[in-house]
Length: 547
Ligand code: N01
Image (cartoon, rainbow, N blue to C red; front, side, top):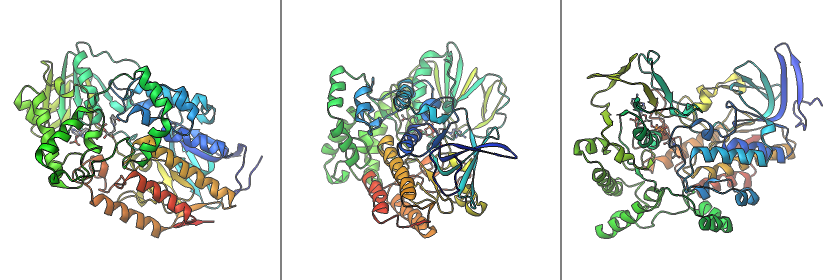
């Protein structure tokens, strides 16, 4: 059935132009990760003819690409799954308290199969461009292969940590051994036995990977630029009894996460750190330290993330925990962070990370003392010597949040490129829409919030908005520039009240040379973020133009 430009169709149409067949849909979702799968499900259930385009050959997003040894999430497993289906909650059993990549990929496949989502997807389809055709009010998406797809609505569920970053080291292509970026890890098992391995980077990824590679390889050299405040994860297997308890109590668990400031099933201690005695403070610190997960960060005194003095008190506690675990005091001091507050960079949760440095086959190189000068055919040349390797692992992170979008050629009204529009940082209303890009939605959870807890809400807001447009016989929705400016200012004001911008990190674009410095995450509480989403709807999409 052919469609008029403004109508929402319920069937796929194909038109043939000079450049070949163009498939037409009501909505296209880019990505088959946590948000993308749910967006396809919601749009289909709302009666839209939806197509998913996914770069990978399967579903999973982050959990498809990040296959490096040790990869796992550090949300409590019972809080990570989708909450939209009670049946799903009952059918799926998490094996570990903090579930690993293979299981997470299986989970998302289980979801995709249960809700029959895969048939809506085209896999191995790398979207390189999305251009808005103003006359037709349609988006045209182009794949790397040149194939084109058109739709009235686009939901870019491209992830916040999916555009990998490889530093532009000189000679990077000269290396004769194997090299991998952690987020493009091969499906085949890499055999480290007897190998000389380098890991560049000591962020959350490297911290998961290093202890496992250290045990398996011949020799491991870690190139560290900034040490992190890593805290024990304390993972474990989920007993049958716990499994049953979760299944009987999902309503309570979900409510707890929704009410908590960060989407995790715990709250900050309402007291201010320095208002209680040292003895009492340290008692809490020790208790938190002994508990699994992020409690040491997000269940700590409420001012740890906003007050530098309170922060420093806990930071010193953590430094001493690190010192106590590393046998060589010189190595320990290199591993102790001193140049940024606790939590200003994302806290990596670890299992036997510091103990790896007590092994005879592990060497720590501080690249602030001896910077990497180039990659050579044999390995890595620093300012003082050449290190030879069989394998180099780049655990060097991501062009976070904006990267997956600005690396695509996205053009809105008047042909304006998103990259230009966001040259000084992301410009959005609630992180999900941007002025000049009608019917274009960004399904990323950029709230400071346990991922799925807020990602589900984000997808619901977007898909409900698309339904609102159709139900009310509008054809397009776009935020007003004033609303966008107000949101950008609000995000900055909130960010400045926290320590999120206290150092260079992906939170503020500081990890990518030349990237604009801006708050990429919304530093308010998760309930406050969701209240903003609800308020827009309650006020009849205030700040948006509906036509
Ligand atoms: O990336 P990162 P990541 N020379 O940016 C170093 C999520 N995640 O992949 O700190 C030398 O944190 C860089 O050094 P510096 C999580 O949200 C979640 O580890 O910039 N080194 C840093 O050490 C996390 O925050 C989970 O000085 C260079 C490292 O590379 C996010 O992903 C697990 C360099 C990059 O660290 C990103 O984590 C894993 C250079 N030129 C990840 N350039 C879980 O859920 C960069 N580095 C558990």
